[in-house]
Image 1 (spheres, helix red, strand yellow):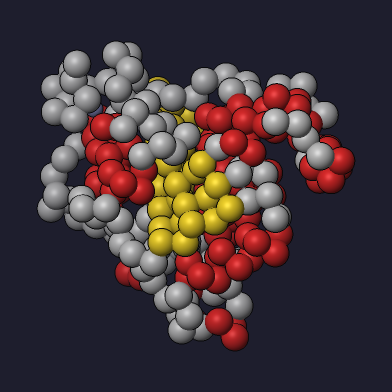
Image 2 (cartoon, protein in one colour):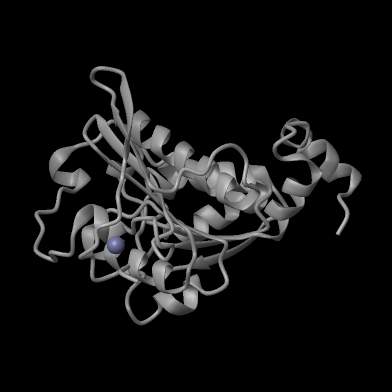
Length: 250
Ligand SMILES: [Zn+2]
């Protein structure tokens, strides 16, 4: 595979980065990223991954655009209220970058379809809005040994982590959150969220997916980034593998 003149120009600003270069760009073009949720986190994540030239994006969401989404879901406009999100997201990606092949999956990811949707991906990016979906995505990414980028937001706060729980010294998502399906769930609709904070986490999630594909910089698996916009505070804490975790114990 060699890069065309148009590709050399389109991706010039990241090819010039020595940690990415032409080889990293080819890796991006060959990669498939599965994005769960085309919402407040998914919107910027989809845009940055498409712009960066990730060759295949599988976008999974069964929701339609509502007026209250537009405060943070930057892929969509007022005229699109009522339309399915994944179809719109696919159109925006195609308009942005013809190098990207989009698979628009207008379904909710669940135990029946997750294995098929995740198989063969280089990264799964979870920006979904509920705990049940997060556990399903995490379990299937772990089983398929696909790195999981998990991003979440609530009110003025956000969390980001990359998981490769099949490795002996790296935690999985359940090491962080436990496995209680009755865990109290905080959704945007009852807690609220500042759109710009969702945008930050979506951009960070895209960055971590690009890191997982190209290997730039340091390995971040096993770290959790916490952001509090109220105090403009970012901190990173180390996550350890839970020796009693039923999901990833070896
Ligand atoms: Zn675990």
